[in-house]
Image (cartoon, rainbow, N blue to C red; front, side, top):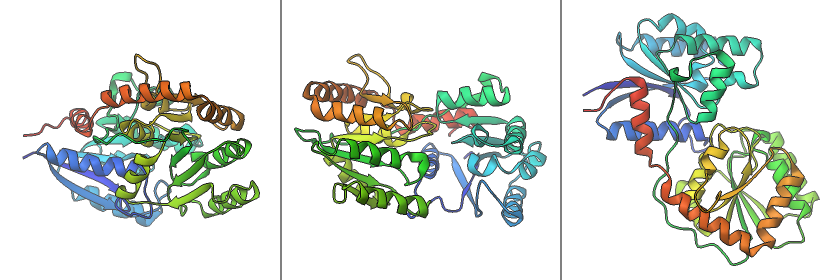
Length: 350
C-alpha cells in the first residue's frame, strides 16, 4: 500500500474554527484513504501563516520524522510561510504544496519571497481553481504545467424546497471582513422594504471586533430579527438550512474557489456572489445560462440591485433555478478531486 504523508494545521477538526481549507483537507484525507492510500497525518500547531520559532521547530521535527523520498502534501497555510523549514528538506522529500489561498497575493515583499522559495523548491504545486493557477504563474513565473488544479467536489444532496417569493436568503462564511458581511448588511438595509430574511452561518470568533461591529450595524439599520447570525453550525444543521433556503448570497472580497457556492448549487440553489477570484468557476454556466448573478466585490449598490432583481422578478427566479438544477447535475464528486491530487503528487492507489 502506498503511503502518503499530509501536513495540516492542528485545528483541522476544531468545530469552532471551520474553514473551507480545513474542510478540503479533511476530504482529501477521506478520499485518498478510500482510494487505497495509507495516510499519515501530521498536525502542526501554531499561528499559521504567522508562525513563531516554536511552531517552526515542531514542523521541522515532523518533517524530519518522515522517511527519505516519501511523498508529502503540505497545506499552504503552513508551507507558504515555512521556507526556512521546507526548502532545506526539499531534496530529501517529495514535497507537494497544496495552496488554498496564495499568501503573496496581497502580501509584502518578504511574504512573496518566502512563498516563492517554497513553491520553487516543491516537487509539485496544487491549487483549487484555474484562477489560482493563473495567479501563481503571474506572481512567481511558474510554468503553467507545473501548477496542477484539484477543484473541490460536492456530495450528492437533496433539492432545496424553496419558497414562492424567494425571500429565504442564506450566507455561509466565517464572519470576517474578507467575507463581505458588512457589504451584505448594507445592501440588505437598502432593500428593507422588500420581503426577505437572511441567515448567516459561520464562526464569529475569528474576528470578534468585526463581528461585534456588524451586530451593531444590523441593529442600527433596523434589521434585528431579519438578519440572524447562527454561528458555526454542524454539518446536519447546515444541511437543514440549505434545504430550506431560496438563495445563497456570497459577498466575499477574496476567494480562490467558493466551496459554499458549489455546495449550494448541489442543492439546486441559485447564488448571488462576488465576481472575484475563482468564484465564477464555482458558479459556472450551463446551456440555460448562469445559475446566479455575479456582482463586483465590495459594491453595496450592485449587491442590493442583484438581490432586488431576485426578489422582485419571478421570471428571473425561475430562470436561475432552472440553471441551478442543470449546474447541479454537472458538479464533480469529491472522488475526482482526490484522483487529480494524487496524480499531481505522483502517487497511485493500489
